[in-house]
Structures are given as structure tokens and as C-alpha cells.
Length: 577
Image 1 (cartoon, rainbow, N blue to C red):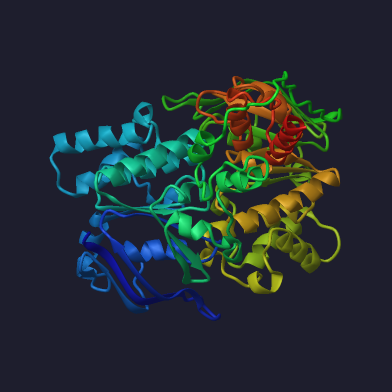
Image 2: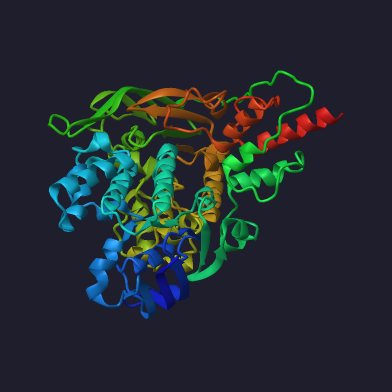
């Protein structure tokens, strides 16, 4: 295969006023052949997104060279040709949305290429279909959810038919169906000859590539096939193995026939043997949630964006929900199902258009509501953290809410505690400029800002999106401690596996209303028939279904991998007795 990208000793630093430069990449040497499918993984701040921008000529190296199909990115005369050849879907997709409607934005790139109207129309229709946005063609781009915005960014790049596409955390805000859609599209494009560079924190996605590059502190730490990479100790690079590999390693103690080096879910499912032991009727997992008085109650809640205009869009419709005091409650649902809109009602950023809502005994329908008192007690971390970050320095950003709403103890101690709770070293980050942060570091900063006042209720909109595996575990550990201390925590999430073990209850949203609520076991019992078709149960639940289909008397309603492993251990012990 011909060489598409050649990097020779490339380095890059972000220069900030009155501070030492932040070196993002250090002497990178890399060769990428045309037609490869490469996953680029690494911890937050390891240089993944910076590398992508260098390949797209949005940035140029301070030293060394980068050549795209023989064109040096240092030559500005090459930039137009390079960017038509190397398409990039940004980590912050709203940064590349330029038109007012979905259709117009998708047509922007092809229009600037001088194509005929018929060809532009063909490409736009194809791109909207491939990204799942056909029914959104006339939707205003600024009214899209975060996941829908990512789909639109993908459509805009697909319409330009580039030789190489860089997916920079493209699936981070998407629901499971959306993530599958992007991966299928990436594979299809690869089969058609497109070079794919897939930047991701999800090891399950990385395992599906042909080659994996591990970034570590601005350098290439590892480079090889998925089998070569994940057979090594990736934890030293702040990563983890794919969940199928982790499950297979644990199950092999009880099912020795499982082959080594299982990487994907499909590989594991196909190697589960048929059960040959004594059959018994599996019991459903029973989970009980402690009964507490609700501190969030909604009845027939409704809300419409752009109400009374031709562009109105109903986001919530006759929604009812009750969340107990001190509970960790998950909101799940497809992209655009109303999760973010509901969370913003709990914080008073949006007010009901219909129905009733009470939070901590405060009537959210009351036009004289004391919003400052409400927000002192109800913290919110946005789905897109850059929307709530406006201070120049990280320390000042975290301190802002504390200054405005009050805090206990000294300000420095409060800020230090909040930052270190989310894995940000106070001494290292307090004077960092917020614009120099990676996507994951921005999310940590937003989380620290929400935690600094120690609210009674913490609202978290996709809090794990964009975080590396180590950061996810650190952040979840802190949330769990706060939960144990009595804080009510309400999640909106597409990443079930990371938080399912901590949830007391789940509500499933579809088309702006709650269609099901209950414990994780009850929601994900059986074949997951409680779920809309565009959602998937957690990995452990799907794997338990595979076991039952092959005759294993595994209980229904399993949502935690350790529970499944323990069940298999007990079954094999009884079968061998």
C-alpha cells in the first residue's frame, strides 16, 4: 500500500502567555499507509487530538515534518488540498457546524468544492442517510442535541468523500445505536478504500481496528495489532483491556475451553459452550432499593423549544418521574430523548411549560423561585463542558461557583478538594489556561466546578464521556463516596457498564417521556424488552442472555460482570459435584 502519511520527528507545544509552553507532542515518528484502519488511544492529555489536527494541517509542527501524500503541511499552499484529502470530525463537533440547518451544513463542504447541484444533492442525501439524519434535514443545527451534533459533523465530512477520515472521539456523546452506526460506517468506508484514524477512549472500539497506536505523554508508547497491544500491560499507559477480553480472562478459570486473545464481544459470544450439566430453572436477580422520600418529583412535565414558532420542537411530553433522596438514579435513552432537557429543569435553567416539578421541596413552576438558593443545593455538570467554562484559569473556574454560591472552609481548600476528587492535581492544573485543556480535562474541570459547593443533588450529564479508563474509575469512585454520604446523584448516560453497579434506579426516556423506571435488574431483565430498539443492555446482561440461550441456568436481570462470573463459578461447581 502507498504511504499516505509520513511523520518525521514532529513536535508541537501550546504557547500560553506568562507561562511555560505545554508540550503536547515530542519527536513523533510515524508512517500510515493508504487504506489502513488505525485506532489511536491514550490517556487524557496524551496528545491524540493534537496529532489529529497536525495531520489535518489545522496545526503545523514546531519541528520535524509531516507529509500528506507527499505534501508538506508547513507549506500553506498545500492546506486546501490536504484538508480535502484528510477529513476530521472534531472532539467538539459544534466547532465545525457553520450553517443554520442540517441539510445546509452537510452541503457546505461539497458546495465549496465546486460540484454540480445534482452531485451536491446526491452526496448530501447519502451522508444524511449514513449518519441517521435523513428525518432531520430541515432541523436548525443549533437545536440539535450533543449526539445529533456529532452525527451532523460526521455527515459534513462524509459528503466530501475524503481519502482519510479522522474520528476524534466521535462516538463519545452517542447512544449505543449511534456508536454502532459510526463504527459500521467507518468499517464500510475502510472496505471502500478510505483510510480511517479512530481516536477513542473505548477499548471495544479500538479492538475492531487493524492497528492500534497508544499515545503516552506526547509520545508513541505502543504500536501494533490489537492482539499485540492488548496482550501487554496497557494499564501502565492509563488504559484497560476491552471488556470482552477481561470477561474471557475471568471466565477461563471455569470454562477452560475459551481461547486466548478474545478481543471482541462477538468472539466471546461465539465461544460460549453449550451447557452439559444438570438443568435447573434460573432465578431472576432480585434487587431492592431503599425506600426514601423523593426529593425530585415531576408530574406530566412538558417543555417545547422555540415554542410558538414554526421551528418549535417538543423535547418533554407528559413526563412523570420520582427520585428518592440519597439515591443514585440513571437517566438512559437514545440521543435526543430528552435527558439533557430534563436535567436542566432540575437545576432551574429551564422552567416547565406544562405539568408540575418539585426539587428539594421547591416549586419549579413558581416564577418567584429563588434560583440562587436552588443552584447552591443542586449542582449541574453539562454534557458539553465547554459551554459552562468561561474563566481563563482552571483554578478560577473551579472557584467561581464557590465564590458566587458559598462554600465551607477556605476557598483554596474547597477548590483543591474538588479538583483532586476528579483526578486533577491542584499544583499542576490550578494555573493552567482553560483553552489549553484536552476534551477530557475540560470535563474534569466542569465536574470539579459542580462539586466545589458540595451540593445536596448533583446532576451529571454524560459525566464519563471523553474520560480515559483511569479517570472514569477515579471519578466514579468519588461519586460513589458522595453517594454513600447521602448525596443524591442523577446521571444522564449512554455508558451503562461503567456506572451500572452503583445505580439504585434507572428511568428510560423515549421521545421526551419516561417509559420505564425501576432497578437495573428489573429494567434489563430477560431480553431487555423494556428498552427502546435503539438502546442496548449492559455487556454483562447481554452475555448472560448468551449463556441462557446455550442452556446455562444463569439468572435473568444480571447487569454486573462480577455477578455473572460468580454465577458461572457456582454453576460449574455444582455441575462438577
